[in-house]
Length: 227
Image (cartoon, rainbow, N blue to C red):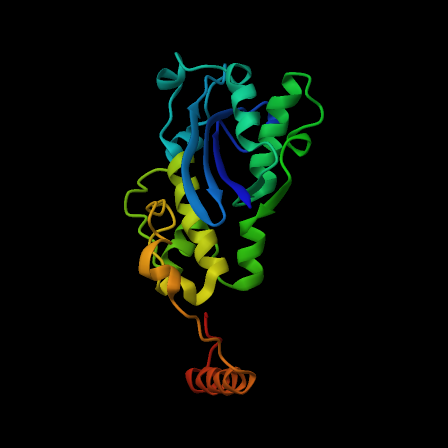
């Protein structure tokens, strides 16, 4: 399974007002492991950046003045995401901006022509944690992912953090025994003595006993357990 965890930074809040994409960051995840392949680019928007947006991501027109335009990197970007599932936090925002950039190039089909599907992790998080904060910082705290280097929003850093968050959200207790998803496994991971480990699966009776135990623990705590 190939997924691309993606984030963008923009000049403002709406492509309908002429705002543009100024940074794209994407991390490739294959079979729930970071492959080590990333896509990252800063873009010249050919327009002023809103002051409020600069406060969020710290990118200025001066910094972006010598960077490529979207059409210069579009082919490489589309090749990177082709046939992958896109994993995006608040997907309508990023997809809307990227489709707007593609329409400027007369590519009316948008991202749907290239990627397999789009998964919105914000919607997913709200379903898992109703009534709670579900922005990226809150999710990093909830899943104990270090985001101390996030002074500003940055597309590649946020994509890397989102990859960790998403895999933590979807792997449950496995997260207690697996190293950081952003570290590709060594070549010998499944070789040698580990290959002969016998897996003993719980019986139906043991699973039922465990379920009842968790229900009683939840009642004692007075809140829903997170695993």
